[in-house]
Amino acid sequence: MKPNTLTLSTLMSLLFVTATPSAASCYWSASYYKRDPISTATWHSTFNTPSLNLTLAKVSVGQVLGSVNIETDNLDGTAICTNDILNVGAYIKLTHPRENVPGFNNVYESGIPGVGVRYKAIPNMGQLPFQMGPGNNWTYSFFLRTLVAEFIRTGSSIGSSTSVTLEPDFEMVLDGWTAQSTKGSVQVNVKNEYYFSGCTSTAPLLNVPMGKAALSQLNTNQAPIKHVSLDIRCMGLSHEKAPPVKIYFEGSNAGAGLLNLAAQDKGAKGVQLALENDKGRPLPFSKSNALTMDWDHTDSQGEVYRLPIKARYVKSGASMTPGRADAEMSYVIEYN
Image 1 (cartoon, helix red, strand yellow):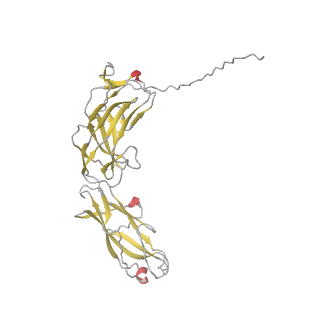
Image 2 (cartoon, rainbow, N blue to C red):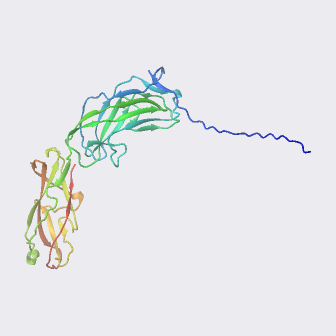
Image 3 (cartoon, rainbow, N blue to C red):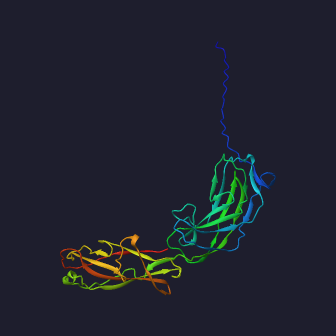
């Protein structure tokens, strides 16, 4: 008889528990040294700044045109976390109703063409948004009472003087505790004294009938001269305070003031088109030699700048072949 055997099997389940960092206890205190809690509630504040005025400075694209300080309701307190260490992290979240400007970090559309806006918090935080990871020392944070709005030049054309409304919202969160939430709006009256909002030709396509020139005239450099004016209208600013408006040209050329003819069947050969302004200066084909245009008059749409041009055919080689003599070039306007 086989004895009954009692086998005891013990099933052991080993549970590995991963410790998750717990949020530190953070609170508003009267000061860092006393560490007497005032409250653990979120302080809700708003902007109490009346309308602000800003005159844009002369700067290059990417630089600061000017800034304004936006004040909030004030809490005379300090945010403190236990042991002065962040277990989860801290951040200031910024919400802006307008889109980011492409190609710029933390710069938002301001509502003015060519101008963006970014924000900084005073004191402590610098540029927003701000983030700090766990394990970092966190001694204290003042209530964020001032938001600096920096206006950044983001384009060559800048809108005319106007008023814009800024509506940035931000939250300061320490180890999961929302210490401060600020919402509101402020009007900024922006004055533009230095920049055009745009420049464009009064006649985008300019055709110049050159007529006929005899080979005998070309041999003696006596081809007829054609006069034409290129008018550029600039908007948004009086010419009295405006920066210079400059122009240069692009096209197949043999140097300043010499435009090559277009290649075509039965086209003329050994001939070029000589171009100069009314002062006898050859028209430039390089940005470094751009011509400054003269202001001519003001019309209902803006300030008109004019470049008088003299054009004539000239001999370019030892021999010439008669034929059609067309040429084409484009121009580049520099302003602001």
